[in-house]
Picture (spheres, rainbow, N blue to C red):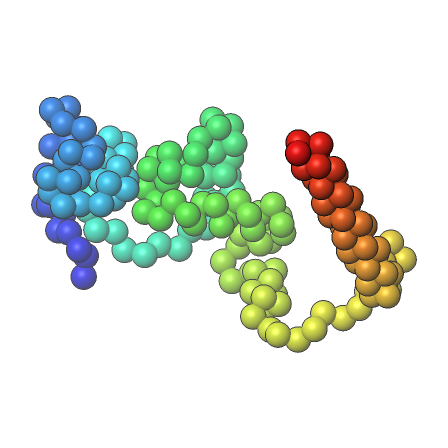
Length: 174
């Protein structure tokens, strides 16, 4: 169900990598998305013709995600695209998801079907109101509303002051 066959991908990449034309010219001539051609070319440079072949969906282990991909990205200061091409990961956005999950929940968040990921997704999907925290460091609802009213009054005052200054300038010009 791929939009392009492996032969079409390989021909496009070889045409681009030959160096006769730029990325956009080759993409336009072959009616290919520029980003797709860029991704195929990066995979081709690292993995050869195997880089453009169809790949089955993969489940990556915790060690692969953390010790290989994320560690290499941090050590070598590589972008998501560069790391994806290096490790033959077809969707580079998944690396950003891994990094975000690791930053939020640590190693437990990276394991497949982890409870941390399931709980986080469950919280996002529910429309129930969040329980009030009894933490003394966070202001109460009444305090927030009072501060909002104060800021609105301050904003209105500054707008009126600005209007008066503009009127004085207008009179001075006349």
